[in-house]
Length: 107
Image 1 (cartoon, rainbow, N blue to C red):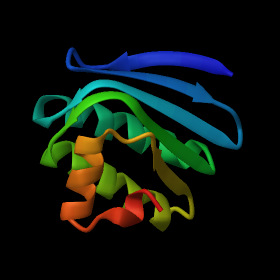
Image 2 (image 1 turned 120 degrees about the vertical axis):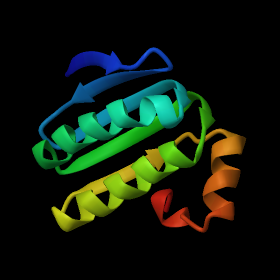
Image 3 (image 1 turned 45 degrees about the vertical axis):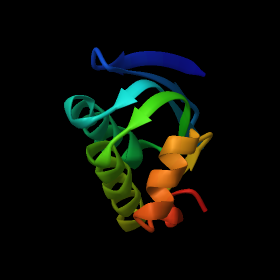
């Protein structure tokens, strides 16, 4: 598996890819200023693999823009008959997902 780091000053992304699955580790804050970089990378990754797993263990903050990117990526993956899964959420991120009723992102 090749690991590729990318992202923005607020959010570092590490990608490990195999033909079957791509793991994206998010480290830092997923906010208005970093959501665009994440969205761009997810648009590239989704068509290239059957399944994208977003590991949020290293994510320290999630705002509505970051949540919007995750929801949009989930819908994009579904349209392309791919799967996007979000794992290892912080309590703050989990609460935001539950309050906004976007629990399909983590199921």
